[in-house]
Length: 146
Length: 146
DNA sequence: TCTGTTATTGTAAAATGTTCCATTAAAGTA
DNA sequence: TACTTTAATGGAACATTTTACAATAACAGA
Ligand SMILES: [Mn+2]
Ligand SMILES: [Mn+2]
Ligand SMILES: [Zn+2]
Ligand SMILES: [Zn+2]
Image 1: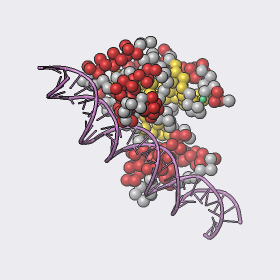
Image 2: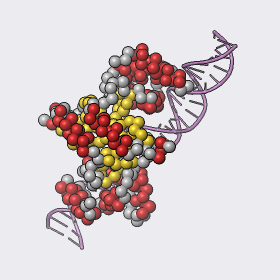
Image 3: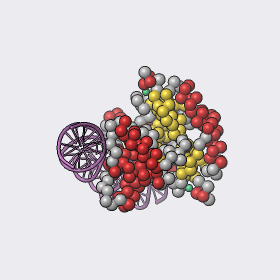
C-alpha cells in the first residue's frame, strides 16, 4: 500500500501538470479518504471535515468538485445505489467490483480474474477502447436473508 | 418478442395483484417504451409524451414514479451514466449488459454466458442472494477513437 | 518577500430529482 | 348507472447536485 506522503506527491504532480492548484480543501478530502477505508457520500465527507477541522472553511460544492476531479484522475472511484446516491472510496486498492445488500447497505468487495479477462475480450470484439468498467451484484447479504 | 397486447395484460395483472390502478399515464409510458427501442431519461419520456399526447395531462413526477414502479416490477431496466443521469429501456429483451461510449453516448448491448455464470458463483461464494446485477464497460466506440 | 496572474473557493442561484398533499380518477358493488 | 372506497395524479415544497460569479488564495517570477 502506498504511503500517504507518496500519494500526496503524486497528487501534487498531477495538479502541477494540469496547471491546477494544491489547496487545503483538496488535501483534506484526499487525506480523509486515505485514512478511512470505506465508501462515503459527498455529504458524509463534508460533515466529517467540518466537524474535525472547524478552523478550515469548506463548502459542499468544493467537496463535489474535488471528488469529481479525483475520480477523473483515477485517484478515487465511485459506486451508485438505487436510492442512497453515489459513494466514493480511494481507488488505490487493486481494482475490484462490488456486492451490495439492498436491505442493510453492506458492501462486499471482490475481484475475479475470469470476469476481468472476459471484459477485455468483449471490448475487443466490438472494437471498443475500454477505459473503465464496473460491475455490481445486488441482492441480500447473509445476515439479511434470515 | 411479446406483443404489446400481451405485455399490457401482464402489466394489468401485476397492478391488480398489488391493488394498484391502471391509469392513462401508466399506459402511455409503457407504450412509449414498447414502441421505442432505445434508452431514455425520465425527462426525454416526459417531453415526448406531452408533445404527442397534448390532450392527456401528465406530470414529471408521475414519469419518475412510473419508471420506478416498472423497474421494481422488472418490466423496465435502467443504466446510469457519469453525467447524463439514469436512462431507462424496456426490459423485455433477454438480459444484457452495456458498453458505453464516453464521447458520443453510444450504447452497445451484449450478453456473455461466461460472465453470467461467474457472477452466480461469486454470489454463492459470499453467501449472497443475488437479485440483480449490472455491468458497464466504459470507453470509446470505434468511431470516437479516430 | 512582494506583486501579478489565474485557478479555486464559498455563497447563492439554478437545475435536477423526490416527497407531500389535496383533488381526481379508477374500479368494485349494487 | 350511481355510489363508495382508495390509489394516483399534478403541482408545490423540499432535497440534492451543479453552475455562476465575485472574492480569495495559490503560485510563479522579480
Ligand atoms: Mn470498493
Ligand atoms: Mn440496454
Ligand atoms: Zn444486508
Ligand atoms: Zn462514441
